[in-house]
Image 1 (cartoon, rainbow, N blue to C red):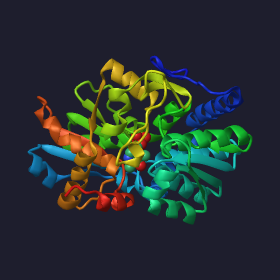
Image 2: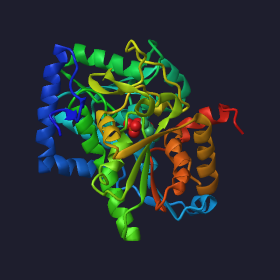
Image 3: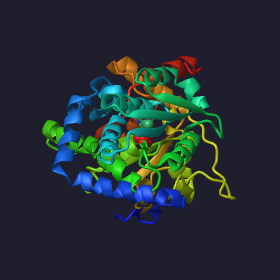
Image 4: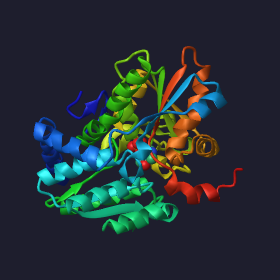
Length: 381
Ligand SMILES: *Cc1c(COP(=O)(O)O)cnc(C)c1O
C-alpha cells in the first residue's frame, strides 16, 4: 500500500483530461491529512455538525430472540442526515474548499450521499449538483425532496439501469467538462485513486470509535464485526480498526442481486480495477436489490484484496431476509434500519453457528425512514 493499489486492485484508469485533476486531488488530500489545522477543523465539523461520536447500542431483546451473547450496533443511523455518508462529505467538502473549488458534483443511489453532500454544501456555501438514476429518484422520493430543500440541483439519469452505476457515469462526465472549478465528491471507496484511499480515511472514524467504545464497555474485542457492502465505505470504515486483530472475524454482506465480490470477477469499472459483475464479454451485468445503496455492480478495490487474502469473508442476503430483519429491529428495538443495513442485521444471527463467535458488532450504516415506501409496498408479510 498504496501508490493507488491494494494488491492487484485499484489504480487510475481514466481519460487523460482527468489525470491532472486526480493528481491535484491526491496532493491536496495528503497535505490536508498531514495538517493539524485541517484535522482539527474536520473533527470540529464531525462533532458539531455531523453529531459524532455516534453511540454503541446493545440490542438486548434481539440478543435474547436469537440466543446471542452480545449484539452491539454502531449507530451511524444517528449521524446528521441519517447515515455514515456525512463523514466523507464533510471531509471532501473541506478539501474542495482548500482547493478553491466552489462547485460540487456528486452521484447518489439511495439518496443518502446526495442528501449528506447537499447538506454540507449548504452549510459551507458551495454549489451542489447531484446525479441520480431515474429509478432511484422514483423509489427514494423523500431524499430527493431533502436535497432540493438544501438548495441542490438533482438531475435524474435515464441511461442504463437508471441506478447508481449510471449516476456515477454522468457525474464523471460533468467533472471532465468542468474540472477547473468543480470537485467530484464521490460517495464510496470506489473509483480511481485517490478516492478509495481518501474515502476510507474519512470513514475510519467509525471503526476507531467503535473499537474504543466496545473495549470500554466489555474490556474485550468483539468476536465478529458485520457490515453491509455496496461500494464498501461503511464496511471499510468499521473494519479498518480491526484488520490487525486476528481474533476478530470480519464479514461483509452484499445484496444477493448485486453480489460483486461473491459472484463477480476482476475487471475495470469507473476507473479502477476490482471485482465486477460482468458477462464473458466484459459487459457490466444489471443488478437488482431492494436496497438502492447496495445496487451497484462493482466494489471498492480494497475489498477485492481483502477477499483474496481471506481477511474478510463476503456473503450475501436476499431481499426477503433483509425485509424480515428490517421489521424485526423495528419491532424489537424501536430502531428503523436502512434496508442496506438490514442486510448486515439479517446475517448476524447466522454467525452463532461459528465456533467461538459470541459477541457480535454490526454497523448500522443508516436509518430506514427513506425506505418506508419500499417496505410498505413489499408483499412479504
Ligand atoms: C450508501 C449506503 C450504503 C452503501 O454504501 P457503502 O459505500 O457500501 O457503505 C449502505 N448503507 C447506507 C445506509 C447507505 O446510505
